[in-house]
Amino acid sequence: MKTSDFYYDLPQELIAQEPLKDRSSSRLLVLHRDSGEIEHKIFRDVKDYLKKGDCLVINDTKVMPARLIGARKNTGARVEILLLVRKDMDTWEVLTYPGKKAKPGDVIVFGDGRLEAEILEVIEGGNRIVKFRYDGVFETILDELGEMPLPPYITHKLEDKNRYQTVYAVHEGSAAAPTAGLHFTKELLEEIKEMGVEIAHVTLHVGLGTFRPVKVEDVTNHEMHSEYYVVEQAEADKINNARKNGGRIISVGTTSTRTLESVTDENGVVHAGSGWTKIFIYPGYKFKAVDCLITNFHLPESTLIMLVAAMVGREKILETYKTAVREKYRFFSFGDAMFIV
Image (cartoon, rainbow, N blue to C red; front, side, top):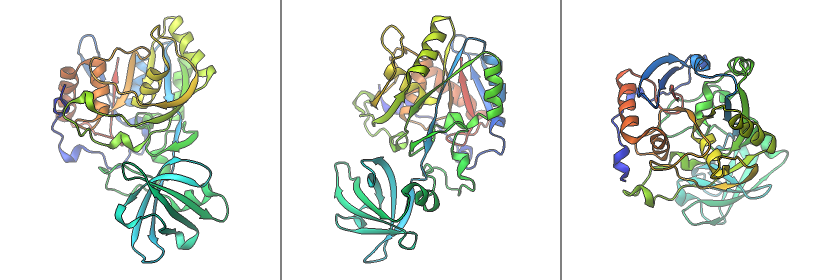
């Protein structure tokens, strides 16, 4: 299976640069897996395809304003830092740009000296380990000085930080949003609950590997990035009970899907726990937990489109994407949604 097997043509103008004012007014392409039928709806119509006893699984991670722009203390050269993984209270693994301007011993200054980062070491892959110095509370300073780490294909400035958060974001730790969830409003979720649909929360802190291209031609040689997840016992119980009672497990996004498939055994039982997952889902994979998927439209040749193709088949998903392009759906993080039922 080749990476190029997952390529499709996408006109640049279909890449959504800004979120819609009303989250639930995005378009929704409904793909019926068995028949191949496609319907064109509005996202709030998603509830028409849910029924009592189903379980909707959402990823409640919260995106950090993880992009910091500063300057080297001794030269004034501009350096950008992107927070990736917290090692301890003040020590982080980060991505730096440009990398050559961040050598061990260098100090980067942010916000007129309110925050400083000393480069401790360069690790495998080129990321840096840095130690921050500051007065006060790190999270407060980060909220004031940091910017949302928008994907590289979004060139417009985001006016409202909250529009790159889901309305149910709780646990801070992501470098990117679980974008399928951006379409939900609190009101829509309440309506879904009132229908008798269970809503279960999982947490997967989304890493920048989400946006990294697959650089190998043979898909099976790709090494997946690692992300931290948490599934509480009460949430696992909700999912297992829904399954036991004949309900469908409907995953909101590829991140919820990867979490569920990482903690579900061969008998379809979800187990509570926490840890790191590197699960890579591509065609040929047999889903253990997820019956249906709500997701956005993903980059060509990405691990995300491969995951979606694993659910419906490569040819069918590429045909569906052609339809979405022809119908001028909006693509990627701030774009429209697809519901595979």
